[in-house]
Length: 129
Ligand SMILES: [Mg+2]
Image 1 (cartoon, rainbow, N blue to C red):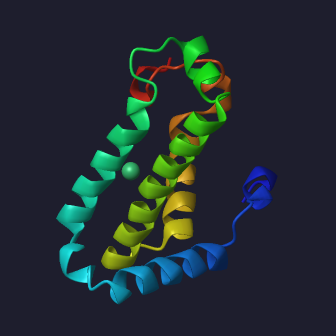
Image 2: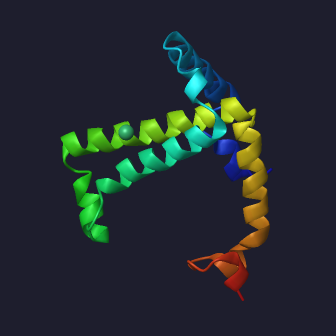
């Protein structure tokens, strides 16, 4: 594990606490019946679309400026939360350990994108030379 990985802001227990809070919210409304992996994956895509909608047709600079407006920033924050809530629900439903999955994928990405080849490049790993 490299130093940068130990600088995480959220611990595994923070994520588990959030998953528990989300489960409580869902259970109180009897919504778990709707939350199978397929429906959750689709709901994630819908919420990502709602996040993206705030930036539709904007340039790179405009996309940064959009977040300077407090009301829009709050709306974007709400969409980010919707996406993350559903991602955590998906993890709960499927039994995926989020911190472990992220660390495994970071290790894969470390191998795919060696710093000496990937630094400053937007190329996909299979096109790096
Ligand atoms: Mg939403």
